[in-house]
Amino acid sequence: MTTPDLLDQFFGASASGLTITGKLVTGYATVDGLEVCVLGTVDGTYVNDAAALHLAAHAIDCVKTKPGIPIVMLVDSAGQEPNRTAEMLGLPVYFGHLLTCLEVARNAGHKLVTVATGKAIGGAFLCYGMFADAIYALETASVGLMPVEAMAAVTKIPVATLEELSKTLPALEFGAAPFALLGGVRDVWPVDGGLAKKLSAAIAGADAEDTRAQVGKQRGGRPQAFDVQKQVLAESLR
Image (cartoon, rainbow, N blue to C red; front, side, top):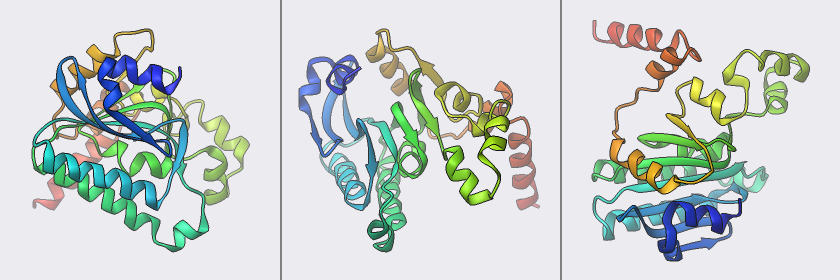
């Protein structure tokens, strides 16, 4: 599905209010009659320092000019830009700035809803998409935090071993369904229509309570995380 087709499915004619600059999408549109702020990535682009600043600036513009409207974050990114210059300039700081701006928006009453539409990988997913109140993914999306090749480089575990482990460990798999098992995605949406209605319902049901560990336990993808979380919180209050 092309980017214009995808935006049309979500926002209809109001998608004309969105601007794509360097594979970054920003602007304002409507979902089932509700005005929303839209920001994100398209076409599997990488996110660098300039991209993070661009998205952060739009989040702040939304807070200033459109108080309280939902923010819809679209993710189609292969990850943070593999660029030594960006790293030397402090790329994580730029990502932190983007997250701070989104937290400002949340505290100002904006709901944050993410839809992974294509690739949702690594730092580019962490620096805005995973920060939402509710995260959804199209069934065709490739969702994950680190490819096995990168894991092998960091952990020194052979790629073949990690690929074998990924068959039974959702945390090592790539895809919308495995990430949903972990609780990181609330629901996986088919791409055969009705995306505007699904997004409208997602916005209506979004809240800031983080239930991902609990959902991961219920679905069997993370059977121990929720219990460990409760134990840590209980010990911290003693």
